[in-house]
Length: 329
Image (cartoon, rainbow, N blue to C red):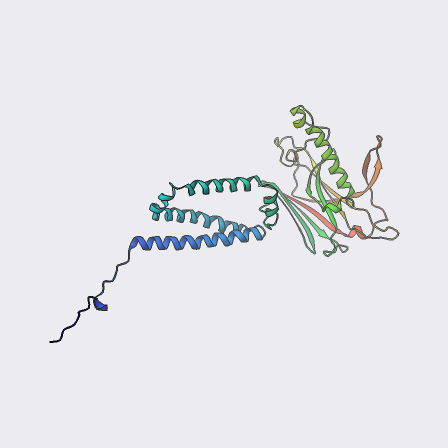
């Protein structure tokens, strides 16, 4: 008689095949979907920081973010038992405190945070944009969705994109007082754009003096220079009583000699904007070049003089400058 030890293991085809657990599949699907969604958020977030503003990219980041919120809710539901244990641990309060502190620091934007944000190429849907190319310079200003301004400067034969001219764009009220600088040139350009520098310095001085007044009403009331708020001119609170204002450009090419002149002076172009009689398209006119004077009190002053034969290539920096204003309801 043959005897032997019988194996307790069942043959392969008799082994029990475990049926898939629906709860386990749901948790696995939710975890993987949440992880991949987070990957999309991370990539779009980094790209949004490194690249200029793109509505498509920001829209993708925001909409996937909403989906991520739903998936996180499902993840919490699937793992509520282990997560419930975290609510009774000290780690919850430590992480909550750190999160609040980090959020407050970033919101307050101290110098290190501002420096980090300055590395971003995403300026957002800014009110003001300036682009310079070989054929034109375009400045866009949108202080309100219902009021969009675009200044298109067609470049002339003397313009060179490799060594572009210095440009300042600003607004003045009817009394020829500065109310807002739209395009600030480089810091080193102040000496080459003296008319804009003089106007802005006068505005800053008048504003400081007004803010130093003890009476708050004196700060908000009308000053000899007019209102300090450009919205009073661009978007007047009383449409039946709008205040006209002007847009000006000062442009200068450093080292542009002409004849006996080693460096031609900057040129100023201007156009008047009247919301009481709105126009969609307006061409800017050449109004002169700045020259320093002394007023009766001995203070520094600058006035505009008619362009004479001392100018040559400076007149060819700009071919034309067109202001377009879209006033939508």
